[in-house]
Length: 525
View (cartoon, rainbow, N blue to C red):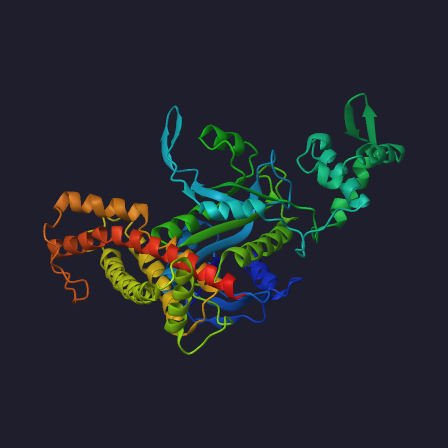
């Protein structure tokens, strides 16, 4: 199966079930999955597949799987194996984590700006020397995550006055001052604090002595009884979504001091602490996937008060936020099937180009026809490069002596996938899709995505600097390849490296065509 858009991995069964069920609940705009299909149920890597319909715009094909144990090691096995087999465009994870108590309330949701393994480094008598390998999310996705709001999600809801009072009493019971808590404004909107606090004081639940706010004995008994009776956790919370670093380690933490250590070890703004996020980011990076995202909800603060009361809520909320994020960021690799089609797509391209170009320079029909033919040649050239990149990926993944140079070698896989997707978009455009704004968006999207990954360029240059750069470009990209020598491999690498300039030129031409088709769409609408 090679048409998976997103592979979602969860670390726990509760998280898996929450993600499965969250997708089945249709949102207000109609988004959701009608049914999940089971695959490979008799193997060590079973998974579910479903088509997530995003309102009436497009469909995202999603695979969902989990390991049998939590932790980075167990997660790496199933995530890497399925990612290699299913070849998703995006790798994702949702679930629960510990949240930094200085920034987050229980139930809040974190979208990872970057992930890293915090316990990597060297332990010495004087302390630990950290050696982090931080993996950032795509900058465009970080910006989108910062703009994401939880409004409309089933688990999101404003707090009632009674819920706000209980929240205040819980904070006092935990030894916290609710006046300075990060979530206070969500429970006590501006102008309501004084009146509600006075009401609690009148009931004898709290006492206010000068600036000191404390829980009375009756207040303690009242809130402890509520906590004893409410073992299922909340159904709705006024949670917020925050974007920031997530740190992964190999142990479950409940000491309450790890946050200070994480700050001292170099990441002052870390928001989340768990065991698997760095694995997801690392696998996506090594395989050259076009995107990855980790969404975790806070179930505790990694302190001695750690318990599971918020666990199910956190699993559910993180899944809902993940699907909302994916629905906005994961778009089809080719033009949507609902776009109007005709039987002569190449003619439509020619007419569009001619219409616009003649408007700029009357009598320029020949130029328009040349540009239409150039689109066809572009598709063929990109497909040839895609085949090159795929062959390079297969050789490097077998590590036939090249692994030491190509630790980032899986970027060839990323390049191949992006080039193949670009070919698919061009083929649909040329062979059966009428021109218009949708066509323009596709061309512009692929114009920005077909460049070689910087890590790939570095790996190629390191290898060629070691073994020498071929002086003659007499190797036919379209010929059959026989990987029988380092020289042959280096020659093919040189071809890919040399064609990088061609890719940049192709990108510029695609941008130009996108502008032309956009103008054509506006002129005919």
